[in-house]
Length: 133
Image 1 (cartoon, helix red, strand yellow):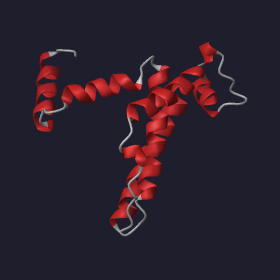
Image 2 (spheres, rainbow, N blue to C red):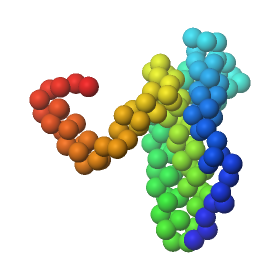
Image 3 (spheres, rainbow, N blue to C red):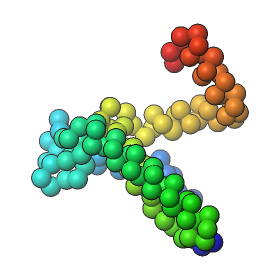
Image 4 (spheres, one colour):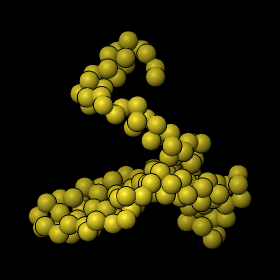
């Protein structure tokens, strides 16, 4: 199985990269003058949630297919490329809903050190009790 070589990106602050990308995506929002004739992001946003949500589904499927290929000797660089596409389209969704990558990072920080099984059980219990977080 081929693997990706280490890069400087692994030692940098990925939050900075996400924030810079978020600023560009937010500048493409229709209310900020995004031009659907010249910008892919503006075109997706202009079409509305169905367009970017469909892309998120497609990209998630492509991540799965790339990972399955990697399990059978395929290039793991394809997994990285597909995850990048997925993250990008998720960031378009975040911008549409007035959210930022920092909101997701905050949630991940909140979950750090918590067992995934405990977290899931807590959410299930809260759902049964009608507690909205």
